[in-house]
View 1 (cartoon, rainbow, N blue to C red):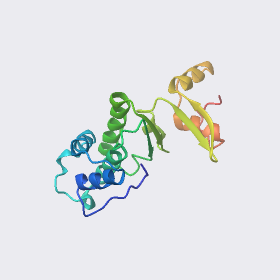
View 2 (cartoon, one colour; view 1 turned 90 degrees about the horizontal axis):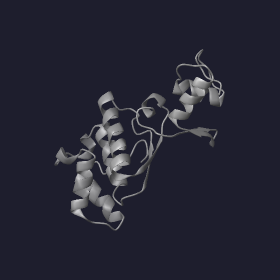
View 3 (cartoon, helix red, strand yellow; view 1 turned 90 degrees about the vertical axis):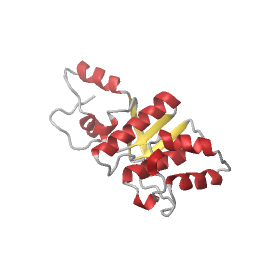
View 4 (cartoon, rainbow, N blue to C red; view 1 turned 120 degrees about the vertical axis):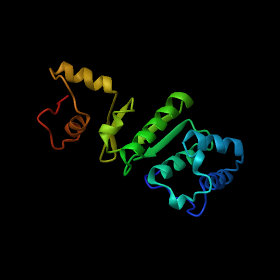
Length: 172
């Protein structure tokens, strides 16, 4: 799912979902309805996508990505531009997909504080290369080993890429 997904603006959520399913050679109205239920777009009825909020568009894009029951879902900046309520809805949806449907969700984001609310593993990509991969537990263990009581994900990220460092920044 890209940061700014495109839809047929004059069509409803179900009409868009049906059109994208047909492109994949699939047509199971019951499955498509289940996807709309899953992403919280059941009650959109005849509302056209051009009148959807950004959060609704993101949820529809995720529903479209789920049409073929993937094992891996890649989301680019899924909460970018959303209000706090929309961010929470997307975060809860990601957690639900991971925990209930056992889908691995890879999220690309610059909003590290938001990622810390649902991510289990992190990777730092700098100049197109993966320079480190770790869990939050790894980061806490390293910070305690260095005599620090707390760690900030943004400070850690900046320390790894050689960016601006906060006084609390960790050198691990």
